[in-house]
Image (cartoon, rainbow over all chains, first blue to last red; front, side):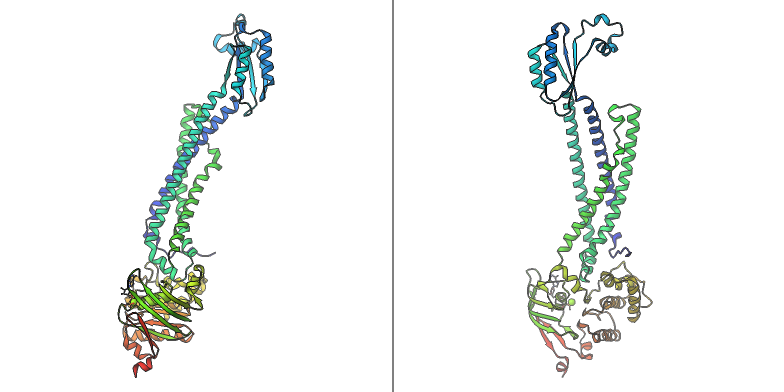
Length: 290
Length: 225
Ligand SMILES: Nc1ncnc2c1ncn2[C@@H]1O[C@H](COP(=O)(O)OP(=O)(O)OP(=O)(O)O)[C@@H](O)[C@H]1O
Ligand SMILES: [Mg+2]
């Protein structure tokens, strides 16, 4: 093993003092942004799986002849993307309204609308408006509840949140690169006389670059570690609070710490960005010396 | 070994400091470089140790046409050149030992060899008791000897020294000259820039004289007679 060489007086520059803090702050923000995005998209995905595949169709009982009803069912069954069509019987309907009206409701059954539950194949069914027109031709009073509609709105909101957090992550990335570049450039300025000397003695660029790179690697690891620890603490606090107040969105999937494989990309990226940026700045500066 | 052809040098848009230099130095020669202050001695040495590129003309060094040598091959050429800088350029936070060891470490020598050779050389230049001293606590003359030791530790093919005796008395100056002559006997080509006329006269070597940006090579013996 070659000994770790340091010919440059790194204590003389300010890099060691502020680089770890910048990096830890960036990693902290990055982790929070990513964790929140993950938890929102996981929650919504969960809803999506449960609900997007259901359509509820109701027909006021006095408006539907059983012929018409059968016709509606036939149309539904022949529609592409529909998996299952079920006309609910009275007892099922009664259990559905039980929470509101109580148990003694048998004589109500005549007044209850006919209800058809439709299950669609996920993502393959999207001509709901055509279907609506077709069904209204048969029974004008028919109502069609498509859970997908509001779900879509929710999903588009969550997409916006995702875009915002990706933007935040990008901004954090740009700030990190800029500050590492700034730090390295300042550092280089302080060390220019020695760098020139090493260069004149026949040091290859890599000999000089490696010293900077090792140093920044070390600082970036410290910074990333601190930032990650802080973020994990904050996320755990979130999680505890969310569980206490049974915030449904948060309760399960917030603090997706089980997603650590995704989350670990934040500190890793920070470290890679730091090292690569340093390398490029130093090499570019060295290339200017003949 | 060293060949200049129509070399001219100016800094930026300033006047031409060196004009139409044409000369060759043979492998193993020992040369003085002299001339009034500001004549361009340091500038000429910088062209030789590849800190500067000439504004015009051709520099041939250690078998390479420098203008045509790719950047990636320059470190290997630089490692064969030892330089004693006029202002020493010791690294302040490194000990005398580490300063002298630097060229060997750059060439990736093993630490065992470094340990042995550096100590030997430091003893030889009379700094056996200051091996771990930082430059700041060394006298000017001692710093100069560290700088010289650093320049010769790799047994370079070309040794360039810029006023290497500026800070020492005549006795030590003469001792250092003998050190350079020893090195010269092992094949190193030596060029020493100096104002010290007494020293030049004591030793019998060709003298390159810079005046008004032009170079004359005088044979020392003829010069004296
Ligand atoms: N980096 C520079 N930029 C502009 N001009 C310079 C630079 N270095 C040297 N010069 C000018 O070049 C001329 C020659 O300088 P140089 O240092 O080569 O002289 P010198 O012969 O070594 O002098 P001295 O004996 O005092 O060391 C001087 O007029 C100096 O002002
Ligand atoms: Mg000079």
